[in-house]
Image 1: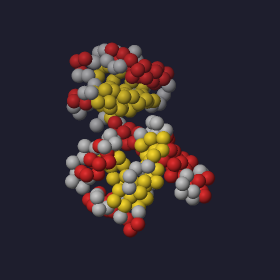
Image 2 (image 1 turned 90 degrees about the horizontal axis):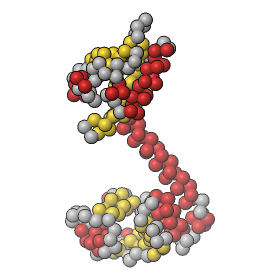
Image 3 (image 1 turned 60 degrees about the vertical axis):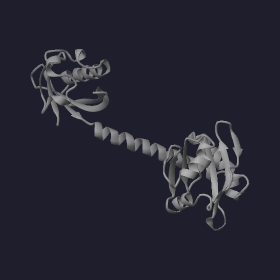
Image 4 (image 1 turned 45 degrees about the vertical axis):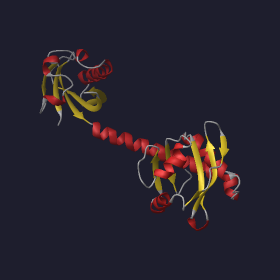
Length: 239
């Protein structure tokens, strides 16, 4: 629900209307008949007075958006202001847009991530070793690009062995040390539950603290032995 405020031209809060006081930054006794700069953080107050000046000089509705920390959580608000005709007063309508802002921020972050991944795919595709299908070189280039560009500590590229009975490491890259290595081959007979899991899921996110029975042996033999905290396995991309 919207919250309405009535201001004097100098920014004094004269009155308000809200369905409940629970959503107010301050309780009424702390802001009524006081100037905005006394009640709100400096940066928010600065935006308010800038908009108030415009409102008092020009006809129309003007606004701004701002964040406020309430109960330890940052929330976002939209403020729309207009002058009361022929009076030195203005009305402000405040709307909580936290949910909308969070959605927009998520969509923006997702778009940026997709763009970054697209650029990385282009970079990998442009490598001569990938174009030529050089099986000795392209695994090293792929793991290095993914490790350096995405900031992963370790990136490895695997392929299934004969009849999908094993996983063979084509390359393992340590981005911190800038070195390439090979991991031992994993056999289905040794890790039957793990192979069963990857046969039904293209993507697996494994934590070293995982207590999953299917991953218990894999976690112990691979992650903990190499002091790896987390491992992401993707059958479509190098991981």
